[in-house]
Image 1: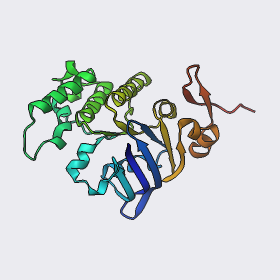
Image 2: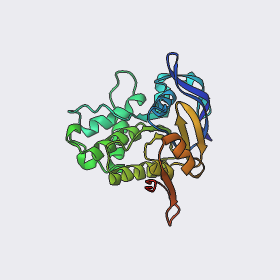
Image 3: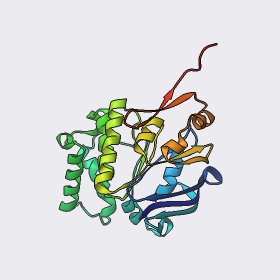
Image 4: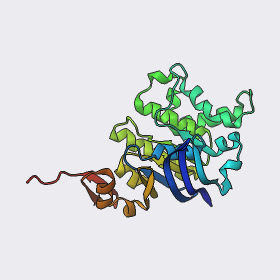
Length: 260
């Protein structure tokens, strides 16, 4: 089944188009990495899928027009983690993760026992049970990112939109977080669309890569097809080598041109 389809989609703010001509069909359970230099339109495209930014073209969720869904139905179908989430300092981890259940509650209704069970399970799966009562402002960067992912997980949506989920994390914590996302994707069958600056991480975790430059699609395919030395040089103005590790992982590494 196709979880997400974009047919000639353009994201815009009023009359200003920031990403255009996007055509994508994602099978359920796949992972798409949206990459590109700063200002390419990556986050705006993600927000267009969410419904938070105006768009032209057609967006289908589970083969249904997203425009036909109510705001509540769309929130049940899509879970979104922004690049810089607002985390109320005095809120506990449990209370924050519980916000993920909001789309499943009737207006003014309190959470049910089943909602609390989902939250408890989300905390357990992300190794946050021991931090459940902690205030958000006392957490480390990696712990805060896991709390955001737990809120996303508690929403029980089939499509996860993650905007730069590794922002501010060192390489170990970034890798650990993406491993968690990949494990949860495998266990739950969720479809992941993420924006990522790190090309190596994009290549190693995503099935498909969408490269934007200046709001235009300049590459779409497997990581091997899109991430070539020539393509990176052209769109990032960067000198790189494309390597493969012994176990077949793709690595994009910067390299200095030889001095004359």
